[in-house]
Image 1 (cartoon, one colour):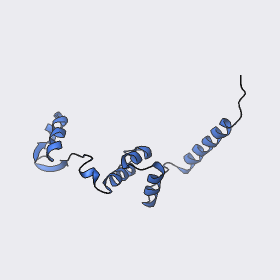
Image 2 (image 1 turned 45 degrees about the vertical axis):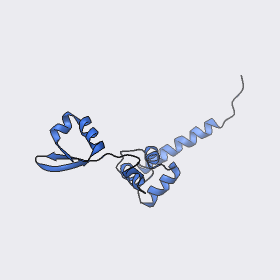
Image 3 (image 1 turned 180 degrees about the vertical axis):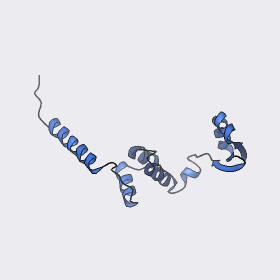
Image 4 (image 1 turned 60 degrees about the vertical axis):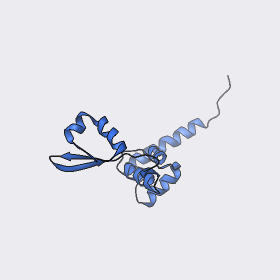
Amino acid sequence: MKVVNVRELKNNPSEALREARKNPVLVMNRDQPEALLMHLDDEGLLSEPGVRRALATALYREESLSLGQAARFAALPVAQFMQHVSRLGIPVVRGTAAGVRADAQAVMAWRKDSSRPTRAR
């Protein structure tokens, strides 16, 4: 295991990430352990059952990933990921009720306008 301090990590993050591909890297802050860097690869930790879904869920809940990005990361169809987070009590639609209503009205108006027949020229 390699040990780096925060300054080394800040000055050369690529080196720490390269090292993390081989072995975990412990990040020290004022002589105290602060973080552990581990390489995430598809054959290792990310291939374990449920890890991708759990990580995608956490990143979506914290608003680090959009719904679509999180679904792709979890390797699920968007509708299935929506059901998954809904079962966990994580809101799929974010924003205020007024904002959601306004968005729904805009979509309905767009659908109404786009369904009108157009003349051929």
